[in-house]
Amino acid sequence: MPNLSFPWQLQVPPVLPDWFVATVDDYLGGDTGKGSAHGGQFAAQLLWQRGIREPTQLTPFLNPNLYQPTSPFAFGDEMRWAVGRLLQAREEKTPIAIWGDFDADGVTATAVLWEGLGQFFPAPEQLTYSIPNRFTESHGLSCAGIDRLADQGYRLIVTCDTGSTNLAEIHHARSLGIDLIITDHHTLLADRPPVTAILNPRILPPEHPLAHLSGVAVAYKLVEALYQTLPQVPQQPLEALLDLVAIGLIADLVQLTGDCRYLAQRGIEHLQRQSNPATATRPGVARLLELCQRNGDRPTDIAFGLGPRINAVSRIQGDAHFCVELLTSQDPDRCNHLAESTELANTRRKALQKDLLYQVRQRLAALDLTTRQAIVLMDSQWPPGILGLVAGQLAQEYDRPVILLIADPEDITDLHSRKTRMARGSARSISGVDLYQLFQDQAHLLDRFGGHPLAAGLSLPVENVPLFTDALQQKLRQQGSFTGTEQPLKTADLTVTVADLGRDLFRELKLIEPCGMGNPVPKLLLQNCWFTTVQNRNIQDWQGKKLRYIKTEFNVWDESCRQGFPGVWWEHYRDEVPTGRCDAIVELDYNAFKQRYEVRLIALRSSQQSVRFRQKL
Image (cartoon, rainbow, N blue to C red; front, side, top):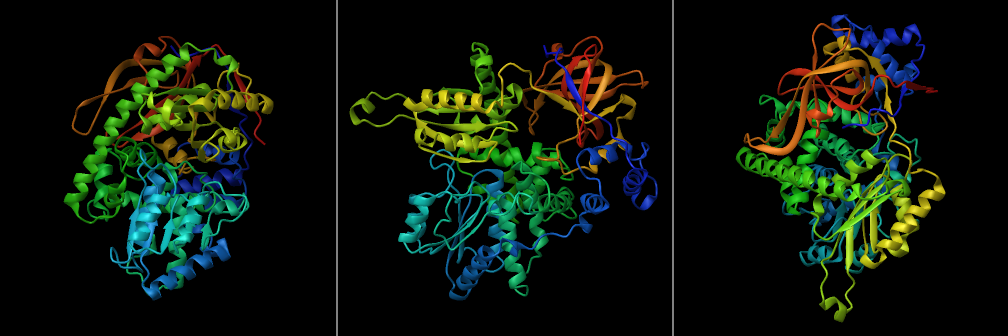
């Protein structure tokens, strides 16, 4: 049963200027001259609460046509050096290798460079790509992979979504006479590595419009710079890459502000064309959208549809090479086969994730979590590709960092060979707790690590795990970031009634999209509501087979309506839904498959509990 006793927080509704509300409502009216049934009040309140308050902020936020995108040459000398080396390679016909990564951001970044650089360098004669195997190679450059490319005659490597901290591998490439152009967005070394160019938004001030670019967006900026330098060469418009950019940006959970928001907005405009046979240009993406029953017109189609499917390939198979072909090939039959293989991998991923989540929760039930600022668990039997997903679910559920590790199997021969038994895994964090810095502080206990403040990977000797765990707990206690006793805080953006739910409110909330880090999906508070026609359903895959994932479907009511409004609660059972009146936090969604508006239930609590208001300045 859900916890129905802890308090929630709601932002203080602001007093809005009339001009602000009128501007938002006029924008909702578009060419029809008819605004929202709610007068644009809900959208205006959300925008104001999120700091969008001036005309110079409001209009480009709502309309990408009014946003001025930032020049790729804002990266300064690094971009000029990168373009100069590519021009030299074009003149000298130097073969180029793209070095990508196996997650959705890395795969789409590889696809963007494959298509974008392919306008200037003939493929496969002068252009190839390489993606590490998740299970056998992990993230980043490797000396073995560099050796393979050197043996094949490559003297220039362009990385995407990786490479910034691979100092040993960079030196190895230099020793072989290989130049490196790094395009990445992960943490930088203290000193610039010895590469031809390094394009990484972390070199920019935090408020810079390019500061939050993901790997695919940095790759796109490199291609954009090349397009601007040699505008007469490309046969494909640069904008044709934007659907790939949107997939990687939104799947990687970067902050959607500045150029990130602009690229995501533009990319979704292109992506939705793939769901229409008359306008589709990517048969692989079109088939994926069909399989996941999405239209491609919303960021959730990426976050819950395309992104998890692309990620599932490496999580289940290790090798994600064919994902680039799936995204870029023009062969419908081949793309159909690859898309269905991707869907099968995602089905397997769902089953493994559910099983692992159950196992970890069983372990946690036996622990006293009030004494643990971070959750660190290890096992030798867990599936490696699923650890990050489950860690992310648990971090949100328990409101603290979660690190899940897989230990090498014990081997008696190790005692004689003195081989170090290693643990490898994934970590996910919460707002305000920087994982990367935590790992940096304990680097002496780790073999290697990398990632973001909220998501990271690591490996360390098994014998160091207890020391590492204790050090993390002590560091977090010193920071005072978590007391170990409070419930996870639930917040809502707007108070609405069931009668407010539907098309008009959906149109208002859609103005906020694309949602993501820094601009979360609006949370709606329904007070004193109740549920009817509550039933469980198993999710079905594209072949109609039942999966072990469960969801609860219902109708929600309150005193404002004469009929209930449909909704779903993912990964919960019907006996968890209270029979009496309660308060609910929901997200409003559109189900393209059922062609209806519905709510996604986020949290429940007793309607007798008070709502704490918080001031948002």
